[in-house]
Image (cartoon, rainbow, N blue to C red; front, side, top):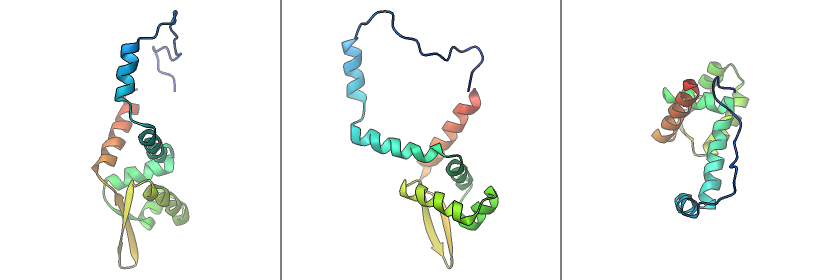
Length: 124
């Protein structure tokens, strides 16, 4: 995605100087490998258009698989597959009411991440 008026090429330093204080500060602020690995897996859930659309639909409230399938014009099987992925990533939770299973976002953090991500791409 090109932005008009912005140079999208990465630029490199003309001389090789390591700013040790800045590097040390960044190292201290950086989470450990275990946390960054878990965060990378978390963000993978947002990298699929269908999963992202499911999450956006659940912002409005809980929906069953049939509802989501109808909304996205997809099969229940395809939706179930994506919901399983989202549940394993702890982004959605399910509640069974009678013979129907309803899905909802796990917590408010998910909605905040979605709204901030969408706002970011709409600013362009």
